[in-house]
Image (cartoon, rainbow, N blue to C red; front, side):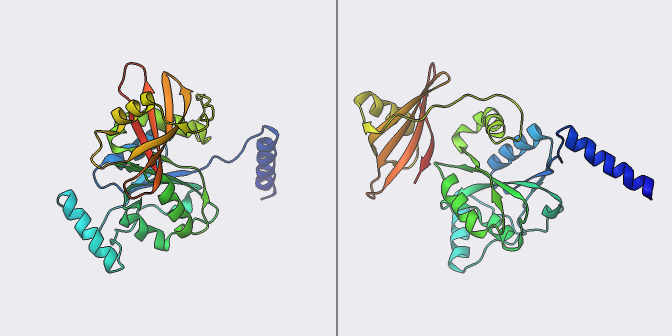
Length: 264
């Protein structure tokens, strides 16, 4: 017994003297309706080599988009969330939880709300990631902070469904910036001050946004910064409802401008 105890003490002292530390155990946990969020989840799992599990509904949302929305809205009116199957993995066994979801109505999908009711994140880091039509990372994270009990939050990652082909490269950059993966990333300057939008900036904005199915409004001001291969713009946009939003647009050489996120 004494010999075993001394061995453990020497092992601990060796780790301290070598600057060693316990490796965090990571779980990628996600709900995916159309497999887009699943694509991001699998990319995170692939790059980190960690565990992964999908949140599944007892009664899956089926049918066309309008059918899914109708059921979800009915559940909201009744104060319900979708029942989910028990998880195979126990979040108590992990130090870091990457929690993924599609954005529904500006926040995380209903099955994630069900999961959060009984989840305790004491002593754990919670890293949100989401997929969306236009935006929702900021609003869903704010909602998570209200309902994820005792979580220590790490800034999350979001990507438009229309840009999912960019996920692998963006996930790698995100994981490096967040300290979960080694590597180097581009150092991004601050955006320039917002100023009245120019005709050229308006043209870039409309090229990036005109293909989107819902009207996003008209830009009033814009700031910009140089990024690898082009320019990123931050537009202040006046919506038809009179509310302002921020829209990020990238314009790279030899490719069409595209908007990456709307922040409302």
